[in-house]
Amino acid sequence: MPVIVGIAGSVREGSFNMKLLRAARQLQPSGTSIEIRSIRGIPVYDGDAESSEGVPAIVQELKAAIAAAHGLLLATPEYNNSIPGALKNAIDWLSRPGADIPRVFGGRPVAIMGATPGQGGTALAQAAWLPVIRALGMAPWFGRRMLVSNAAKVFDAEGRLVDDQVRERLAAFVEDFATFAAQRRP
Image (cartoon, rainbow, N blue to C red; front, side, top):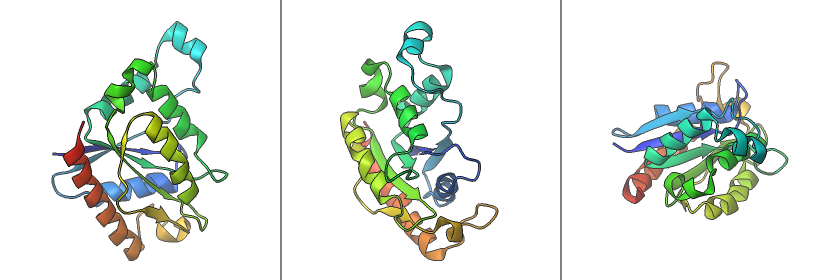
């Protein structure tokens, strides 16, 4: 069964991207498992702390989950037309020590999706992730795009996906990425 680790790039309780990730898990195709992992609690990267204390346990656990998975699904917010700091910080920690990059990221299938209350649907953030993904040697999936605009209208107060068109697009996105990840597992 293909296992995909899903990470939302926001730690906010009401994060639209966590809602999108949960909706993706509900729509996962039969035989696929999307395991949602949190970046909450990952400290700001500090090379001195890494040297003296090592990689934090929370980061080591997330690294192990990603390394064991068939793919990685990033649900990215867009802050100031670019990458959210909390998610970039998590990826920076996950790439430490550098010798672990091939085990954790090398050849790992990755897909990016995002939701925003604005009009852009996180297109700029998704594009800004591409150099990072390339630097880590991941295998980006360039199938369907999953850009969700006006996210406050797409989810209800309980966080459920209520827009049928978005649900249909998300189901196809998840199914196609799961197929890609299962075929390309490093």
